[in-house]
Image (cartoon, rainbow, N blue to C red; front, side, top):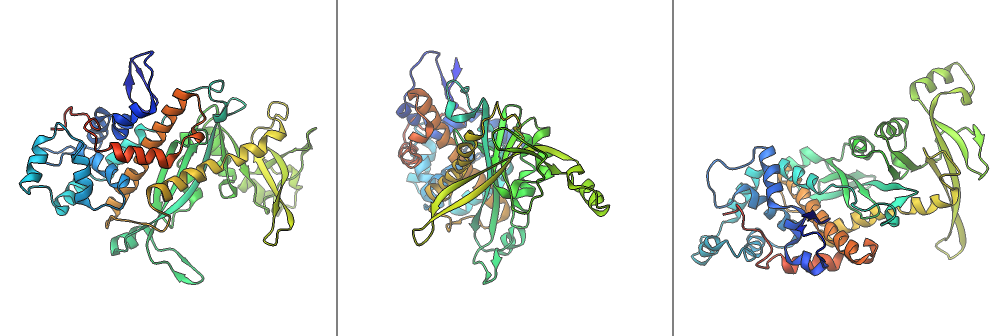
Length: 425
């Protein structure tokens, strides 16, 4: 047996089509029931007695809530239930008006908690299954391309949510809803999440990112915007065995230590403690120790609001200092690939949540976290389905529509084949 990218087991040599993968259930293809059981057991969330709403089923229900974002608890339950051909006793209860109430579903969600959903999401965070030769769009000179970025989501304004997550504010006042900050690390080739942190607004993106750098490894190159560049971040990425390409803020001190033949130059990101000590002594800037980097500058032509020609200068710092192995002309496209994570965030915000202004339904911090992890699980499941179809057809995953795949998954969520019967009744 071999395991397909979406997590489905198929016989070696069997031709797997995208509609087939949808038909067996997008959620169980990415999150097989036995692995969901392991996540539930890891956090000791399994019920002590037989219940109508067991923990494993509620894990799938948490994902179904995200897939049907605008539907009420009961409607989501009915859609999920209609796909359980083996769940006769559940449907019999519905017929005699014994379906679980919203309160019962809420209590079952609370029994599950959010921690098992973090473990369920972790199941899907696997490296791309193809090498640079088979999937050149996913690699930069043999290095797997990763990108990092953050975003926020609105949640219901309750005292607990406000206290836990905080309210956004600016010069015009306080926002209408509490917000949760999410920072994600993803492959740019597949847009599959490789690490996620969820926290309050008071925790900055850079702080949260530092918890994700251990998710990188040898053979990776991380691309990020200006907010992620610091000595501490570079050191953590290097310690993980990875390389990085980060855009530079204008106030970063980058002395020219050596000019390379291609026009880039070698510099360093100063070690903060040594920098402060040596500057107080007025020692030369070039003598301050730090992490060796290569600086690449280029400009991009654009138009201003009046249609006039303007250019924007980009300055990148990279640990890829060998100008022959990593030609300068390849870096603009690599940095542009960072926008793949922006697209992934757009998929979560708009294609799954109906826009960045949408408000999650949960009223307590733990259930907010469960809802977010359920949402990200659905994103991963759809993304895994896209990657499986792309591998089968030899396409770049960018060529397959996230929206259409989501719509197909929604249609098939209620199919009789959508969920495996093993152990759920």
